[in-house]
Amino acid sequence: MQKKLIALAVAGAFAAPAFAATSNVDVYGTINLSVESVDNDEFRVSRMVSNNNSFIGFKGSEDLGGGLSAVWQIETNLNMDGNQSNKSDSGNMWGTRNTFVGLSSKSLGTVIAGVHDTPYKMSTGPLDIFVGTLGDYNAMFGSGGVYNGTYKGYNASSVFDLRTANTIAYLSPTFGGFDFKAAYVMGLESTKTSDRSSAYSLSGTYKNGPLFVTAAYEKHNNTGTAAANLADCNPGAVCLGEGDDDRSAWKVGVGYTIGDLKLAALYEKISDDADMVGHTTYGANAAYAMGAFTLKGAYYKAGDTDYGGSNAGAKMYALGVDYAMSKRTTIQLTYANLNNDANGYFALGQGPQVVNLSTSGADISGYSLGVRHTF
Image (cartoon, rainbow, N blue to C red; front, top):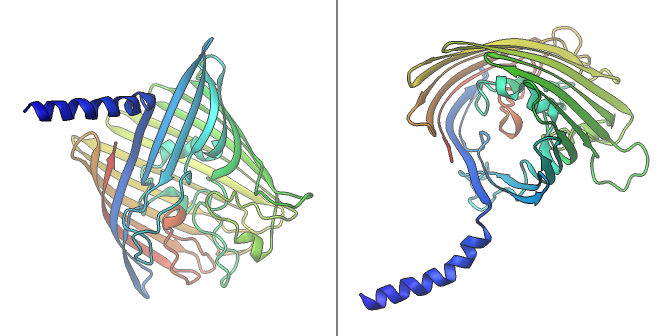
């Protein structure tokens, strides 16, 4: 017994400095794993998906005095099932999600630099009731469809609604329910000295009791129009190839809560100087809580894209039910259906988990069963 006590004391002596050095670090994250089956009436794809916004993060702050603090965060995606090649050691590098360092003041706001969601993305994020599932609204919002039937240049949420690298952002305090966000994206780290891509993003949000109102604007400068540059359009690349095309988008969103019922409506317009991806999107969703169960439904419609011309839009709806087993663990059952017009090429899903089943005008549907746990 005495030897065990001595061993514990020695171990505690060595462990204490390590704990002291990391006492200001918070560890947090979400694990969202689902099994899905998706088809387009020609073939079916079954898969296990772990990166439905699954991530782990570390963050902390240091009091600098005078109401000023240094803040930092390191956040990365989690691929718990490996990847499409079934390789267990093919994880992502650190910092694939919001990763930054900055200064924060309760009265003046926060300035950060690094990788971060744009204000445009953040503005309506709280209104996406199917986030990280097959019903995610980024199948329509922030998406550009595909600009022709052979080159599939755009995945869902690949044009706007981005998490961008090389970003400097300002996040204001909340004044009377209103807050403001602004960001400048320096674009790709390139040796090109002229016509380099860049972007800026702005949003304003008002929250007061049951009411939520938000508006956002984003502009991409000198984006590419050739297929090689369009291939840069994936989450985090800001769709910023090197070229002479400018793209912009604005959107508004409204949410309102009536007892256990949450309602939301959204509208977005994307414009493109090269007439490639411009179109409008609108839709609404609702969620109703009944004890541990939450019933959810959404409908979204995308208009014709500039390049596709007539019959190049799509519509989708999603139905789902969540069961909260605890405050941190939820079972999710989701069904989603996306109907492309004859020349439409929108894809079901969001970000890297997009389900693109190849054929123009495809009607894509699928269902998923998953577990989401936060820590």
